[in-house]
Structures are given as C-alpha cells and as structure tokens.
Picture 1 (cartoon, rainbow, N blue to C red):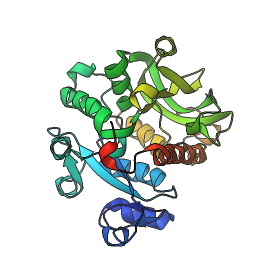
Picture 2: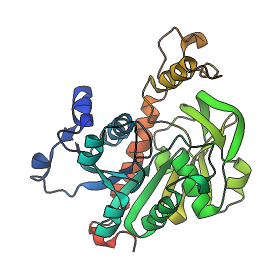
Picture 3: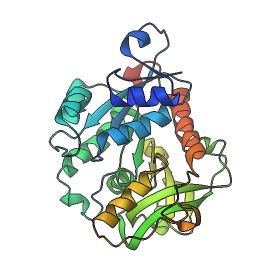
Picture 4: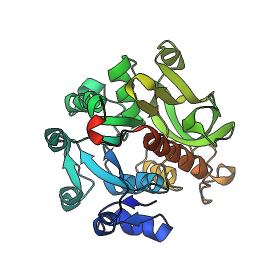
Length: 307
C-alpha cells in the first residue's frame, strides 16, 4: 500500500517517477484502513535528499504510511530553503504541545560527529525527544549519529573517534538470522559507511539490554536492538542513494580534504567509473521488516501507544 505525503513535497514526484506508491491527502481520506503514522526527525543539512531516501524505503511497503516531517525547534538549516521548511516541517515543540502519538519515528544522523554530545546546540531538546518517545512512539529508529545519540542517552555508551574515516561499502554479518528485522536477509550483506566515530562492540556487549543484529569485523557493530526502549540503532547508511558516497568523495576532493577512495564502491576502486549499488535490496528488506513489525504490534487505538 502507498505512503501518504503532501502532493507538493518534492519526494512525491521523485517517488512517483520511480514507481513507489504514493498518494495525496484526498485519496488517502477515502480509505478505511488506519495508516501508520511515521515521523521523520530530520537532522541532516540536505533535508530534501534525506526525505527522498527514507520515504523511498518506507513507501515501498504494502501499508499506507502517513509521513510527518519534524525539525528541532530552534535549530535553523542553511542548506534547505526556508519556504520548504515552513511548508513541510513542524518544530518538535509543536508536536510535543499537541500530545500526538506515532507508530514509528526515524531520527536521522547529523554531520556533527566531532562535537561532544553536550556541545550540540540542540542536545537538551533532543534528549527530551528521546524521553518523549517512551510514551508517544511505538518504535524508534535511530540512524548513524542519531542512533549513537540515543544509545548514549539511554545506556551511557559514548561514541569513540576513529583514527581514519570509515568510508565505503563494508561487508556485515547477520548475527541473528531469526530476528524479525532481518527476515529475508542473507548471511552477510554490504552496507555503506561514512563516519568518523564508532560504538565499541565491547561496550554494547556489556549492556544486557542491547543485542547486536548486524556487525562487521572491519567497522564494528551496525544494527542494534534495544527491546526495553522499543528502539533500533543503526550506525551505517542503508538509506543512501547509489551516488551519495560519490557526492561526499567529490566534495572532499574539491575542497582539498584528505580522503580515501570509498572502499568497495567503485569498480576496481576507480573513481572514474560509475559506482555500484550493492545494498539496495537489503535496505528495502530492513525498513520493510521494521514497518511490518510496527504494523503487527502497534495498538489500533493510538491513545494506547506508550502505555
């Protein structure tokens, strides 16, 4: 079934051209089935690109999704037009005041890995988001920095700086093949990675409430389940487009930054060649499984979420 998003949101035309089922408000209002309410707290500077990436994955499921775009209340983006933010995003303070609930919430990464969490300008508000999810969200998905921030808040596990950027496509092992979130997964898979920090496997294993579902010998834990907080944390980027790593690489080269060619991304590691997407099918599996698990377990009456 389709994802419901505003007809004038850029992602509407993008996904329609790609064959993803989307619908506007009028068409959705004529359906009897209750849509799943999924929020996207978008912390990335390129808001539209990130909207497209996550809408593409959750919109490929056979369920109707009502996607709500949320931003931090005081933080202003310089990379997305103000009219786009005004038209499509609500500040978290408004969501909080309305006391509304969500079946699922995705909290994206943010390019602020070099900062201590306490140095982030919106850290206090983000902590209130994490606490709010426990009573107002059925399942939360923290991505990259967003996942590291959640695991720090709930479990006091801090991110560690890497000596060099983990950058490219790395093989990951399926460590719990019977997990409903890994339904249909191969024994291993390739996932895009782009980060300067990591969460140590030893720190995760020392916390009984956490379970590693996907991990890599090269870049460490990737996907972690936190049953007690109804959350998943993923530190890598299944949502990336085929050319996202290329965009990052080309940007760094043009700005004169020291950067390695992304690992296992270009054919023969040759940046003059078109990059190869080796993760698309598993990306759809993971987010489809997450949506399905929400559908199977979320209360029909949204007032019961978080109780």
